Length: 364
Image (cartoon, rainbow, N blue to C red; front, side):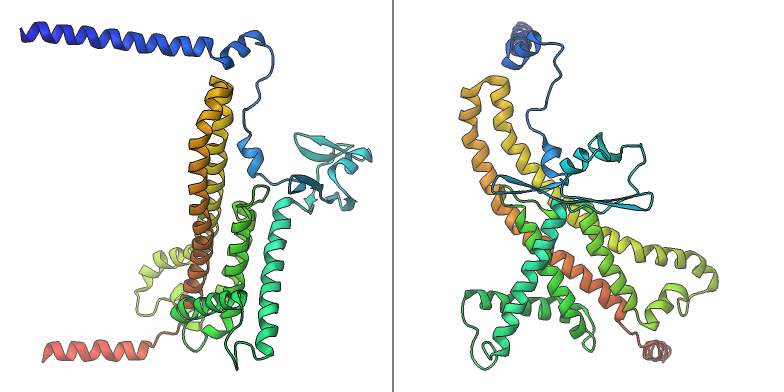
């Protein structure tokens, strides 16, 4: 009996599997996309939604659905060319567009492209808003609002909360007490600028400039130079000399320490870039499922499924807003940690006395 039941169960499983495979085959053969492909096999397929086209840098700025083309500044073989837009550069006859990039008509490649781009514009927006926010608050404090009396208004209270947070919980916490004050300005500025640039990506037409590796690498490079110029003599001794370490061991440790000077800003740049880029791609892909389902199964399924995808996107927007502030905090925190490690002084004489005293106690 058991053998007969097992055989019947296997037969039912095989039939179900065949039915599933047959259904999948019918779906592939008679879906709207497959039928359209069969009708026009020679036509070049275009993607339902261009994910990369939404996140790459552009030569135009989109504001509320309106495209504003940006200037092109090109250096070719030592000669500078300035145009109002890519279209005007091509219309002049001096440049042609090849594979999405401009090349001079005689075939000479562009030596240096200093054009204004959408990502650069949003970097400027973030910096300008940070300056406006800070200057506005500084003027109120100079008038005594927030010094002799309590801060007034929601905006000033938000500024004070953020500034005190950066000062007390980041700068003061990780940088030596006698040095942290001169780094507060940089840490607060970079925190606010990154936060603004991250939040811009939440706008339907906006761009997260921090989803561009050149932007995050520039920010990390600034932290790198500040860290190195803030390095104490003791810091550099630990990089090259390693007090108390055998000379043969230094041969191994010194290259590792020098490499570590560059891996820290590299980690800063990649961490911020990867987090902001992945969030943008995820939102575009989820919303794109509406068009993909419409293209494959028809408008009824596409519109019906949009309730799920839009709801999920709304939740992701809330999460992305939190991540925008979190990543600004993490970048600022790590910058303070790296600066504090370089600026810190170690009392080797005191450490030596402690070790000697401990050894004496053990002997006694």
